[in-house]
Length: 430
Image (cartoon, rainbow, N blue to C red; front, side, top):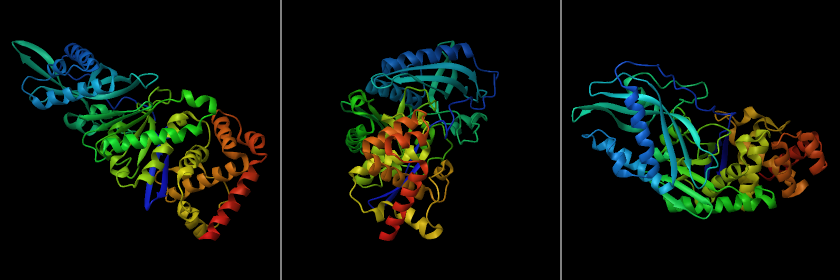
């Protein structure tokens, strides 16, 4: 799901990914057993890797690299350093060999990676990753050394075709941000930011935005639930390609998308729902625009939006309604794309449909402004708490018509009429 938003002179796109957008991790087109590599030694190597990374033991993890490969030793040390800074538990489990060893004994294996940010994630995430290994002989004994704990689908396929892509754009293999190189970690009482050291965004800036985003998003919860709200976790990869890799998506899938709220392993039932930031996009925004983006995503995270049964116009419109409460811009600016659509095609005759929110849709920005407008008129009728209850109840599976009658005294047709009237009013201002 994507949000196009004009704030402070920029058009921003954010996306919330749940089961309706990208499926969970699946086998990445593995080729099955390939001769020439010792699976038993590989299993042991990954067990050793799991222990060393979980302990944050840089010395131990360096010893798992080939003796003459400083690059591999540095990659492994970065993973251990990230673990120590974040406080996480990680386990790699060997699944199968994907490619035959090349001339120097390097090969790629599929592994199941489970990981959990210990202080913030309710449950561990689980996804398939591609691991680069090398069979070496040292001091007369054969062992499997670790070259890279997680490589992208394109890199994994260098020695053989393992990076099958699904029709959702998913490659089936992921590179979590904390395994993408050196990271910087920033914490507050209720936020955690894990950012690539190579990202253009200043970690301190992201951390400040995250604190405000969570504070602003708390109103999306019932008063009695706010003290129990989950901590907000933001992950910032080095660039757009890193965002694609973290989400197991084909290169370019998230181009132009400023942020994504998603289970980090693609499974809706995961206990690790994080906001993943596209630094190339967010870095272009002024503070007000960046704040709206992250508050919108914080609403998704705090309300567990990927599991919501509500229609997309309500999920996205509600997140916008909360985020834009703090923005003082005229409706002619915040509804500019919707007004342009009205000028071309006339007043909308229905509520926004799921298809309107496809990331490739021509009028994506107008769809999000329309969803926000629907939620705004509903809040004017039922109050902001009433809108929240509509979001909660419909998200839990209650019928929209019944909830509208209970909370606003409206039928669905009444809501559409009020929405059309507001769009007509805003269009007349332009």
